[in-house]
Each structure stands twice: as structure tokens, then as C-alpha cells.
Image (cartoon, rainbow, N blue to C red):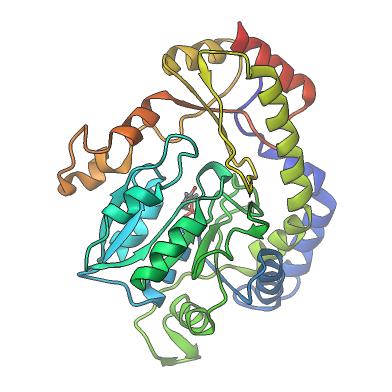
Length: 364
Ligand SMILES: *Cc1c(COP(=O)(O)O)cnc(C)c1O
């Protein structure tokens, strides 16, 4: 038996005809950067998320970075962010010259805890970047309430949550702006790098549109010192095809999650994900916890089952953020999560039999 953690080939094979057509269309168009494909995808994805604007950019990290820049966040400003996230969320803040202020998650959802968030506010706080980790929407009502009280911007890191809903509303439409990643392994993945900013704020959309293209609104007239971070036509054409499948594929992931819940709920040594009320996750990852995680991972590997750890080192303990001076013990919840989490295979192409085999091996 061999079940990889992530199956990257089946998504292409299922959509081969449409993707190959999109490829041929762009190849023969003679236009490869910022054209009709990008415009059309932006319109389509904005509509999907339930927002007015979408701006395609080079990747997810750049989406977060340009959204912060669009709100003029920089040196001297503090941005509150989860202590347990992928390092990209932190890097976006660091790119702007602003200060990262990490906050611990709550034990149930693994998402940022609004009560702890409140304690981290200072007069320098300018923005909050909640992450919908593993595809589970964060407690946005609690977060927006604090933001409104204190005049803060909220930029959702939606890189793992394409199509997830909070109180019926899609992620990407819940804060002032959001950053998405279309890295191939995400629920909506390109066949290369890609990202987008979504927002209802017309000024922010204009700023990000300029910032992604050297800071120019009109060719050779540069309003800002911008960047080069553009979604290309080929990736946009692929994303248009894949967006049509997103809801169906998310639904198929939901079925896999249901099977995991059914097969594993009575395993007392495991902690399964908790789905808060009023939330529809899209199961980017299915993350369980076990006291002896490393041994479990090894046993599963011996049985041919691929798993990963998201993430083994919290950003404050990584080499990159050593200058922060936060030692082990600074964020105990995030540190314990890093030692106990295990991501099981998850995706729209996992078969019922494969999931049954995984469950059987875990139980054994
Ligand atoms: C993937 C990811 C990013 C970064 O996206 P890239 O497209 O790889 O730059 C940011 N935040 C989170 C939570 C992610 O999972």
C-alpha cells in the first residue's frame, strides 16, 4: 500500500482537456502578462468570494504584503498575527518594516483567540491578520468587533481557506481585505505560483493594482515605489478552469473528513479537529493530535501512508526570527501544537478505500 500525503497529478488528469485548452489558448494569444485571462479570473474570483474587487498577484505572501502596504502599514506599526501560522504571514509584516505581534490560538479551533488578542493591543497596533488555519475560518465576529473599537484594519490570511464560510459568508469577504495563495497544493491551486487580494475597498484595490506593477496606474507614470508581483495569463487561465471545480472538490474533501471523523472519534488517544458553530471549513488539511506524534507518524510511514506536520517549528523559534528574542516557553500553546499535530492525507481524489486503509492503520 502506498498513499501519498498529497496527490498532485489526479487534479490535472481530471481536468486535462480543459486545462490543455486553456494552455493552448494563452500560448497562441501572444499576450502573457496582465491581460484578459487575469481580468476575467479576477472578476470571477471576486464574485465567488462575494466581494467587489480582486487583484491577482504573484503569490500568497505578496498578496498579504501588498495589502498591508496598500494600507500604508510600515515602520513603527504593530500588526497582530497568530503565533501558530505558516511563517509567510509573519514575513509579509516584516517586509513592510512593521513589527510582528504574535498571539496564541485557542485550543479548540487552533485559530487566534480574540480574548488574548485584546491583551496584545497597544497604541501602535494598526492591523490584525487572522489566519483561517487548515481551512477553518477564524472567529471573525470577535476579531472585527475589536478592530472596530480600535480603528484597526483586518487582513485575512485566506491562503488555506478558498470557499470556506463563516456565518454563511465566504472567507476573503470578512475583513477589510484578504490575501489568497494559489500555490499548487492549496484548495484552489495554479500550476505554478499565484495569489490574489480580495476587498470591498475601492481605494485599496487601486493601490494594490498599482503596487503589483511597479507602482504605476498608467504605463510609465509611477505613483508609488511599487513591486513586480503579477499573476500571469497562463496561471489565470488555469485558475479559471479550476475555480469551476472548487465547490465540488471542497465537497469531496468534506466527505473524506466525515469518514475520518466516523472512523476515529472513539480513539481516545487522538484529538480530532473541532468545528466551531456557524462555520463551514474546507479541509485544506485534516490535522489530528497525538501525544506521541513522532511514533505515530513513523508507524504510518512504515505502512506506506504519507503524513506531514503543519508546522514543526513555530515562527518565533525559527532561525529567521531569532532577533525577536522569544525563547522556548514564550508561546506554550503554539509550541505544544507544533509537537503534537499530524496532518493526514487529504484531497478530492482520495478514495473511500484509501481512507479506510488509513483509518485502519491509525487504529492499529
Ligand atoms: C501558503 C500560505 C501562504 C503563502 O502563500 P504562497 O503562495 O506560498 O506565497 C501564506 N499563508 C498561509 C497560511 C499559507 O498556507
